[in-house]
Image (tube, rainbow, N blue to C red):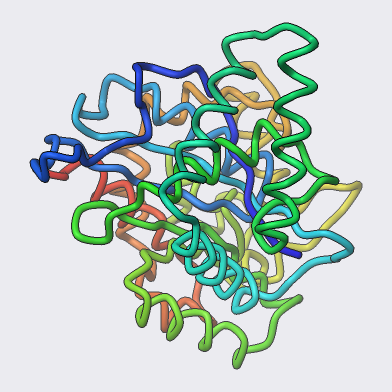
Length: 302
């Protein structure tokens, strides 16, 4: 079973926060970017912080969903993209009454309810688990799953965007798996943000363009290999060093000064353009296409 869960704040912001299109058929001037992250720490924190930034127009919403999969180890990029495609497809099978139930149960849980009401909701959710076994897991946090489902069931491909953040990670995934991930993304109109070797390279672009590799005695081959030493990859160690020099703070995947990176997002975008950013060429070249997602969000006309 595969699915997705929400991250960040889940406080409701209105009577029907997930009803993006009203029954009148008139589109509200709002666009949703649903960001699927494979990483549950670094990438997730970045886009959560971005969603709260004043750099984002008021008519733009960013929803971050990170991946979970029962009984699984690490999946290749194609499987990640295919899981998302399947999740969205299965969500389209939810009838309108059940969509309203997802929202209602979530609202009651978040707003607070009595133990009696909570027990009643739990019993009703168990029925939904049986009805939609490919979408809901009793082994995962129900509140997160309800939010994720309420988010994805309002997705409108005419206006909204599905964005997927993955690492090339040449040491783990084959070229065929990578190429299939790109093809599947294009077929489903997903925006794929790839970093080679990893998302931390994209973060480095917010500080330093790394054009002078000799300065730190780092070659492009070193970057692609991204060797791990003492539980940290080369990119993580480099980030840690630069953050200590720039901010006097360390870099850890699960805890870092994410606000600093959002403040320097324009620099990150510009520096990223100095490297490869075409996904088909990122298969063997240093670079990142994550900034293309940021460009889409920041320059969106609605």
